[in-house]
Amino acid sequence: MLLGEQRRPRPGGTTLRRDGPLIIAFLRGLFPPGGCALDKGTALAATFEADWAGTPDVTKIHTTRNNTLPFAGTASGTLLVEDGTPAARVTELADGLRRYVARRRAITGRITADAVTFTVFADRSRTDEALALWRSLTADDRLLTGDIHDASTKGTVRWRITLTAATTAGALTLFQDVVTGGERHRRPSNVLSLEVATGRGVRPGGFVGTDFHGALPTGAIAAYEAVAARHAVVHAAMRPDRVSIVVAEDAARADAAELAGAAAPGLAVTVTGAR
Image (cartoon, rainbow, N blue to C red; front, top):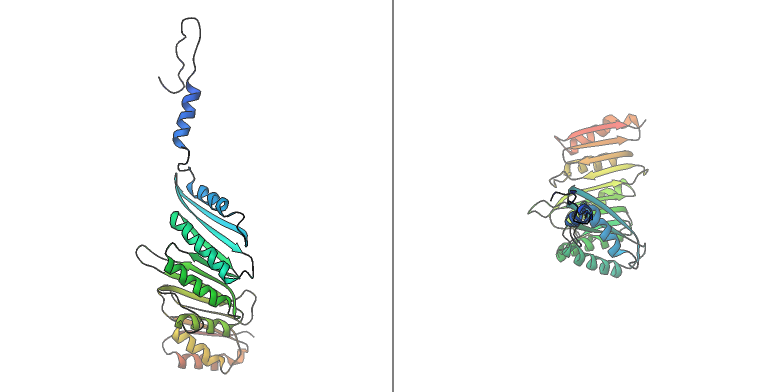
């Protein structure tokens, strides 16, 4: 009998309709108890919020979802931790979230604490690296905000780190500290890209960063430092293949351009004046 078809009347005049129960059974087949939802990313995000709701010291939960195909998708959940929460408690939350995402591979777990967000990995060693950098960054008064993000590709572990600082000089020093993995900051292994910029509205403005393959802006930094030693710099953007510098006085442009070119021969140099 086809779906929706009515049976012939039985002797005695009683007619049985079977379309309702069949439709219900069909829908139950699409959405079995405990099975995959049609919009899996949305379901995963809702599950993350429900599982972490009411967690002490977590003030807010932010989720994103990606419904790639029917019954397929991923989600990301970020725990926003109350400012001033002790590092030991953040570490405890990270360990719990690490075990959580290890059991749910389609969910990415993140934590935001003291203006720095970091990804928590199922792999303990990677989570420990993220935590170590989080601790040192939150203790650095040059930092405004930070993001320690996973940028891995299949079979290759990578990191993408984005930071903001209060001044151009602070941004440059912060960049150099993280790159060198000195005593102040523990640089994670296999950093794909690192960018440090001054915060929005901060003057003078600045940006310093690697390229997408991790190449360092060594020449651009040398050019900036040569100019900044003699002239007031309003803005500087330092990249591996080029540098852009804005000096406070337009009259200083020619000298600044000469200084930058001498410090970084062959680098693309742009120098302009603010007035």
